[in-house]
Image (cartoon, rainbow, N blue to C red; front, top):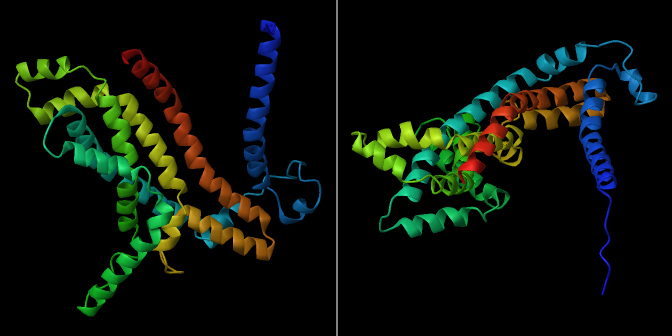
Length: 294
């Protein structure tokens, strides 16, 4: 028989701490270096890359914000992300509630369709979506109207919400199922209808899953690139922040303006970091509460 190898508890803790420190450094060091590089002047990039900036050169952010249109791109990303999240929640919350709490004839078919959507990679269908929108715009122009579907951040938000529906409904409905029906029955006895019960009883109890959905989809909408660059085709038209950043990186690499390039990168990262810091505590508390309920 093989002898079991017993690792001392203190040695196991040391190994765990070392692994966690290395993992943290792998994440923190590149982010910190990007922030540091954003304040450097161009000639500082040709020396030691780890040297601190000679001074805080804020002109990089001014140039990225104004000359590279990063301010305009950030506003477009904010509008697109907020609209996408609102449309997603307005659609997914009632759909998940109905699929998880009620029985009707086509319930299994609808669930199968939504579950099937989990296995569809958006990169595979972005070209058909573009062709469909291009044909629709061509028809609008043929009847004397302006194009609507391409180069429109509202339509981009609709596509974001639609492609996020399968995962969102799956996550929400999985959580709704765990909520005891006694809460709904008590609300019905008190005279509440289906809509009021859903809004006043079920949604507050499902806060853990709702916060998780908002966080995950915010990160995806904010950083999404493939759909945005495909549907926003006008070089001088509206662009989201990731698309604008990629254009800025190509331009600044050719012009060797690295400080401005990293300033644009920081402008993309900062909103995500701020949002995560604000939500992290509530997300952790909500997930712990959800785990206890389960």
